[in-house]
Length: 215
Image (cartoon, rainbow, N blue to C red; front, side, top):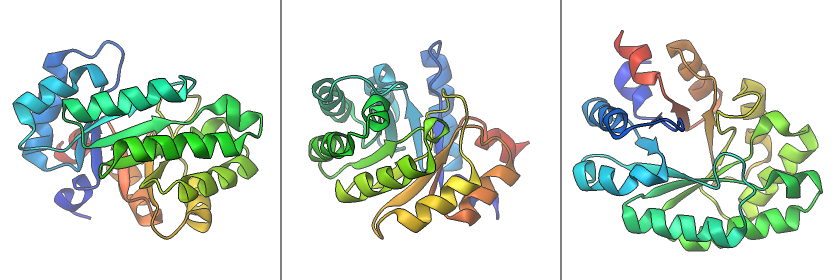
């Protein structure tokens, strides 16, 4: 796969707690140069990124990140604030405590609330696969499908593990036809990116994709 095609599927990502505007600016300039699918940045930088690059790139940010245990009301407010500031894609983290208690109706309802709050904008649902059983992953595929989110996303990149090809295969079997897959966490090389795209992921969340293709 050539670099242009591969990078068009990449959410060029910088989510470290110590991220600075200069680093976000570099990320945005790389996204413009290489035409990545989006930049995925902390909510605090969305407005400034939009003011400087909003006509050139798609801006994605994260909601309830990285632990997912914010209340639904707070997550909804985060979505509304992010969109007001210029984000057109939001990646939310599910409440893993609800998952572990088997409260899948509650998980699904929260996704529905954020689906409504995000409106026409893209909503991706991070399920943090490293903490889940296969049964929980399957149930979350159903929740994401029923709530009409646009994507199911494997990982935050801040858990105990990242994306696996096995999880992409599992998701493909259990998500609805209108739900796409985003793989993230630990994807660093050209070989990684192309393997996940070949397996069925439509988006790749990675911080080093541009570097992998341009060096």
